[in-house]
Length: 387
Image 1 (spheres, rainbow, N blue to C red):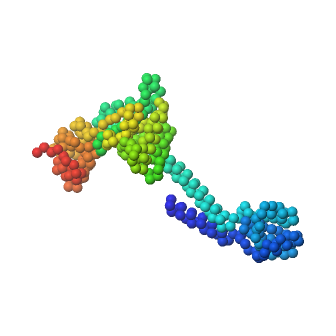
Image 2 (image 1 turned 45 degrees about the horizontal axis):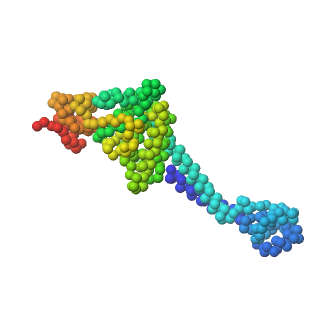
Image 3 (image 1 turned 135 degrees about the vertical axis):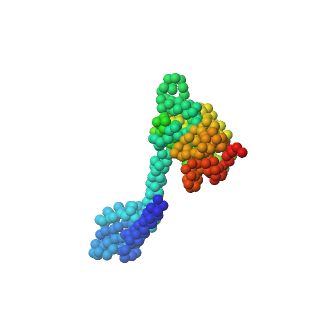
C-alpha cells in the first residue's frame, strides 16, 4: 500500500507545480494604474479581467493586453460595468501561489481522509474472520467428557435462548478455560463450535494491542458487533490474560489502554440481552491475574480447568496419536501412559511424532523405548522411566 501512496503524492505535487508554472499568470504589458483610470474615463477600455493581485485590460483601439494594480475597493466591478466594460471576475478562481498551495493541500487532505475511511472499512472487514465450520470435532480431543457435556448444554441454550427463558434459565455469557499451556484449550473451543453448529470467531489478546490510543477498545466493539450479526456465535479469546489483567489506575499509558479495553468488554457483556446469541470463551494460563470485575458471575459465569491429562486420557491420546504407527511389544499403553505422566497433550503428541521420525530414519518399522527417550530429549522434557 505504501508503494501506491508515494506515487500518488508525487503526482499531486507535480500537478500543482504544473498549474503554478503554466497556469494563467500575468502576461500583459505593465502600465501605471493612472493610465488605466485615464482610459476608463475616456471610455476606451473594452474588456477587463479582474484578478486578486492585478487587473488586465484591453483598449478599444488595440488588442494589446495591459496589466496594472487591482485597487481592490468595493464596487469596483460595478463601476466598470456601468462604464460599458466587459468584465470577467477571476478573484474566486485565482488566488496566486496561496490558492494553488491551498488546492494541493485540500486535495491531499481529502485523499488522506478517504484513505483513512478505506482503512477502517478494510480493518472491519478483514479483522475477526467468522468461521462457519472449524472442521474439528470432539473425537479429536481425548478425555474431558464432563466438560464436553456441560458446555454442549450451554451452547444448546445459546442456540435456543427462548427455550432457556421458558425454563427460567439465564443463558451463560462467558466461560473461562484455564490451565497450563499445550492441553488443547483452543482446539476444544473450535470443536465445541463445530459440534453445536454455531459460528466461531477466534482471536488472541495480541489482536487488541495497538500503538494508537483507544484502538484496542474500538476493536473490542467491532468484535462483538460482528459476533451479534452472525449469531449464534462463539467468540474465543486466547491469551485472555494479556487484555484482562487486573486494572492499574495509576499506571503508564499502556495500563490506561488496558483499562479501556477491559471497561469496553465489561460494557459489551453487560449489554447482552437474553437473545444475544453470543458466548465468549476466554483461555488463559494465569487465571489469578485476571481482573475480578471481568470474571465475576454474570459475565464469565463458568470456569473449567483444562489440566495435564490423567492416566485414562493419556491412553486415549496414545491411541489417537499412534494411529498408523506401530509400537514395539515393549511399549504398551500402560507403560507409555506412565512414562508420559505430568506431560501436556501437546508434549505427548510431539514426542510420539518425533519418535516415529527417529524410527523411520533408523530403518525401524516399530517405535522402540529408545526412540521415545531420544524424542523426549529433543523436546526437552523428562519422562517417568522405571529403573
